[in-house]
Length: 146
Image 1 (tube, rainbow, N blue to C red):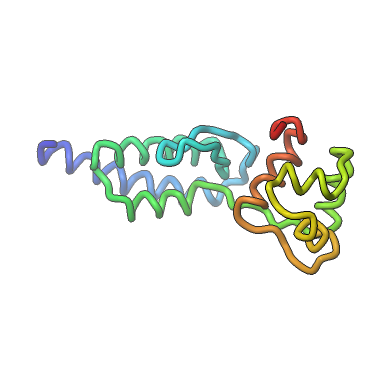
Image 2: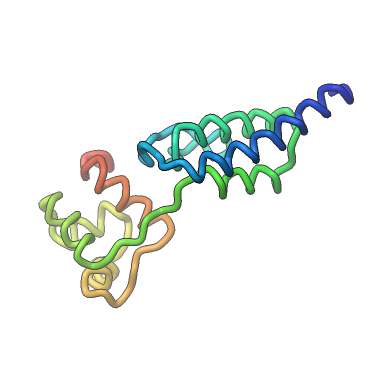
C-alpha cells in the first residue's frame, strides 16, 4: 500500500469508530441480523444493521492488512452482540417447545444429560458454545441442528 492509501485507511478507521459510537447510542431495530463473520466463517449476530456494515468494512481492512488484529478485536467488541444468558425457566421452555426429553436434548447439544439437568435446576448456567446453540434453537427451532 502507498502512504496515501494507508493514510486514507486510518482516516476511515477513525471515522468508523466515531460512527460506531453514534450507532451504539441509536436504538437498534433488530439484533438478530445475521451475516458471515469473515474471520471465523460462522454466523454472527450484530447489534444493528449499521454496525454490521462498519464491521464488514473493518474486516476488509484487516484482510488487506490496513488494520491489525487488535484493532479488529475492538470492532468485534463494538459491533457484535453478546450471547444472552439463559435462566432455568427459559432452558426448560426451549426444550419443551422442541418436544424433547433431557437425554435427547443433551444429545443435540453434544453434552451430558446431567449438564442439562443442572441447567434446568439452576445449579449451572450454559456458557460459550452451549449458550450460542440455545440461542440458535430458541430462534430457529431444533430442526436447525438435526
